[in-house]
Image (cartoon, rainbow, N blue to C red; front, side, top):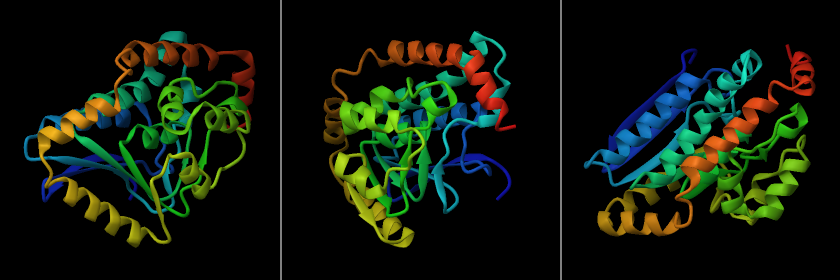
Length: 250
């Protein structure tokens, strides 16, 4: 697979949203825009009762923001626009009327941790370690922080943020509440995701929607908050410290 994509397929009233990028599922602006639109499309599709969020490939769920695009940011407007990509996807997941099940089949970094945290119920395999590397390059996980803190708590979020060069194990993530269950193989993970999603799809859709709104009570200000956080990150990425750090990765 050499071409990036976002797809939506429907089976047994379950909408499977899959994203892919050949560079470890890192997320450029066009993929983030398409992912947001696809979540909204699935949320409005009456033939879908439950959504599964997954990525293609078998080694990495999501490597976060596209590093090439981060390095190409030239001004604060571009920076805010780019980092608003993850903000818009998280807000689309938050406001989507359908329950979203996450399927994490490998390592996830930065914004990818935010996507996992923004699902309503997340399953993973034992290889799904997580890292928030932003501070190590001079920015910070500002945009995804509300979603991650909401799911694993401020203490665990702070630990990951400060220990920015460490991958925390899938088992650690499960004990903190990011993952609900872990599986030894991807095949077992896929079977569990399918079983759960199809079972939920037989439940009362209205009850699921109302329960979803309860899960996300108190987050109504995130439309503004995450945009403000994107602006902070967009400015930091232009700092001399971050520019010099990024040059080492060219």
